Length: 516
Image 1 (cartoon, rainbow, N blue to C red):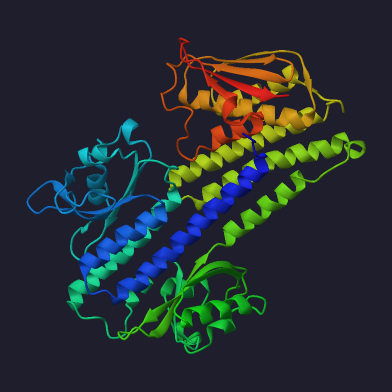
Image 2: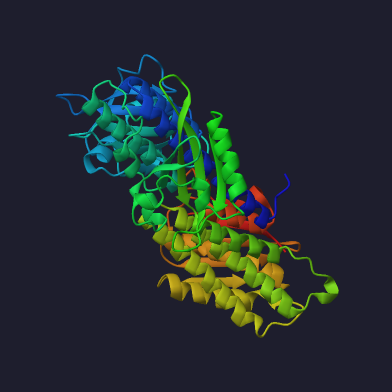
């Protein structure tokens, strides 16, 4: 199978991630608008499960509610489950259960490997359906905890931190709707929207007339836009806030919403204080009791930081892909291309860190980014003395491993590398692959780490051993983001065929075939 270049794989991964985020954002807005008109809690909860399954690309989603006088939860609403289980199936509600822990602590729970989970037991219901991944998010009630919103999956990609944000958005809408229905019985609100719900959103939310005039902006929106009070914008055309270059796409989205459609776009709009901002905007119609478009709701998410990182990333990719003729391929030019490759990986890690809602995950990603920069500094030192025809692998790797050992751990690293020369543009990926393997050994293994690099003609065989007890059966299937193994496969030149595990060895042993 043809292996895509690393930059193309990164580009496609970004496009996939962005499409998923955009879709989830739109679904939250549409569900919020729908909830404002709902008078049936059962309908609202079933719809929430449908929306979650769609946004998470999974068959299974459910709402769990505490059973009165019991420590268990009841599966009250859901999609993907057998009809006989809905309204009857139970799961544990104690803190040893993912759902129980989420509701008792009001903290979300994400697990991509239930079979290896050490924090909680796997409920029998999930075992019955072969569920491997689950996200549990608490639903707050008016006076007491209401329940848990859960997404489950038997296959596919791991759930990620941004999925938590999506589920929490749906959960917040449910909480506000529950409060509204509890306070207002079954009567629809006369103005068809709840300011308390809109103010609960961290995004910039506007209610517009069908002519496009601003009727309401939530507190978060005024803060993000540096607007002191609603009177500054109330009654003004929404398009007036946008610069001329962005107005056509704004007008088009409004026209589609007035016609009864939902629309989404990204555009530039500075704050009232003229600070630059990029926004991901979803606009949808609010229907009257007669089914006619009565108002519009526009939800704008600040994506400025993401946009800046993506622009930087695309710039680095463009530099990396610059075609240079052989006659012009001087050492200085090669040096800069290799540095750009390493900074490309660093930027990707920083981008993923900024998308993470979990502070611990963010710290780990930022640490990984720093490690890549450490590798870049080693390269820079080596290139200062390198010959134009190439770099001696044993010297280069010796310096790299010394740097990694001092930066990441006090563990001993022993290198046995054949003496062969590589051009700098292949030496950089070799260093990246080896550093990733060693980082894994430092993090998950124990004892002395042995690194062997053997020249096999058109390829090298990299072997990394430590004194650990081997790899789990699922390895090298990705855990977390799976970025490390994807980089190893990409830069090896052999894709998925590059990695071999020696499961007969007494200690942890991994081999990687690397194209020279």
